Length: 320
Image (cartoon, rainbow, N blue to C red):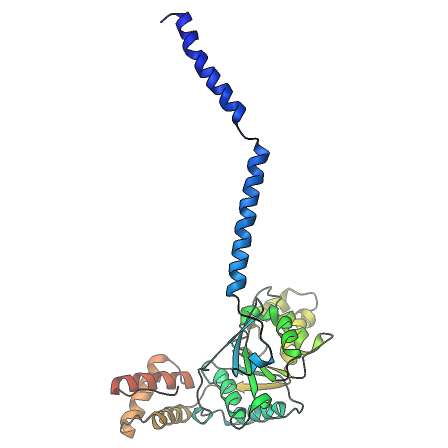
């Protein structure tokens, strides 16, 4: 092919490219369209979330249930049926039971009462006692006299001031309950709890009391406290701010490992309550064997053994 022919062949291509370049939209126009599409998508998502969000609770809403779960986005969801153990089934913690019931009853009657920290051995009924105390106090109460139980999860502690603001204006009284409360490392969320307990300007609302459970007496791991002391210029002040958090709970209730007799009493109590029948010697032998395989004796282990025994004997555990 000659040079002349090649020139004629490339001319239409150059013309098409020139025409395409002339009709190409400016970059700013494309960016504007993309921005509009993103904005429209975000508006759609926001409208969808708003439509599905639970409406804010009012005094009338609080009357619809006795228990709620707090969410950090500002929502409270109702708990129609609380998972709890009856107070009479909690064995080996008589003194702690009586003290907490008395404190809760004073609060429900509008009298001074203390925030409570239930600390100690795992599986000994700390959280079960809080839920059982709430149910016991409400047995003969009606209307606005009924206590409300609100659970806040450990990871949501920073939103506690917002919850206090919501509850402050209500006619009801509330137990705000945090299960398995503890702090590790450089976690600073404890400051929100500290301010609500005592230190804030507004303080704790008169219609709110805080109950917390923890395996740690000072809410901190022992190695964390020792590390702070060993690296500080003034060891006595190194952990004072964090340790002082537990001091702001006016009521400390310690739970310790149960004895063999207390463990067996728990098992017998569960079996009698749920109608599980087994010869006394057989029940005791199997219960002790179960605790040995678990490496501990506690109310939780007694309940787990009861579940195993009931399943094996075909007994349904209704009402738990």
